[in-house]
Length: 122
Image (cartoon, rainbow, N blue to C red; front, side, top):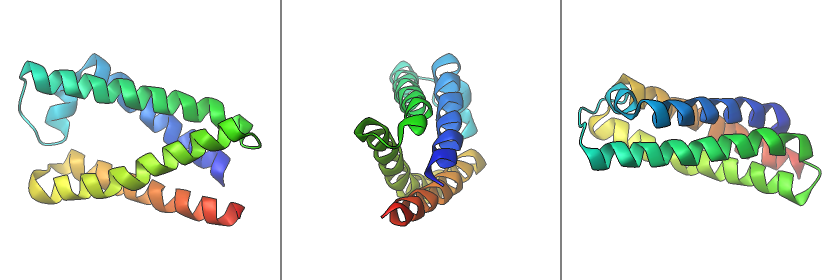
C-alpha cells in the first residue's frame, strides 16, 4: 500500500511544486487569496521548490522501501501530509476558497492512508 501511495502523493507534489514555481499568483488565487505582492509570491515559489523536492524524493524512494533511505522518504512524505492536513483545514475554515478546501481534503485523505500504511507495515 505504501508504494502506490508514494507514487500518487509524489506526482501530486511534483505537479503542485512545478505550478507554484511557474505561476505563483495562479496558486494564490486558486486557494482564495488575492495578494500579488513580491514576498507572498516568493513564499509560494519557495513552497513550490520544497514540494517539488519532496515529490521527487517520494518518486525515487518508492522503489527502495526495503532500505533506510526509502523509508526515510516515506516517513518524510507521510509526516508532511499529517502536518499539512490540519494546517490547511484551519486555513480553509478561517478564510479559504474552494481550492484550499480541496487541498485540505486531499491532504487529510492521504495523511490517513499514510498512517494506515505505516501501521500495516508493523
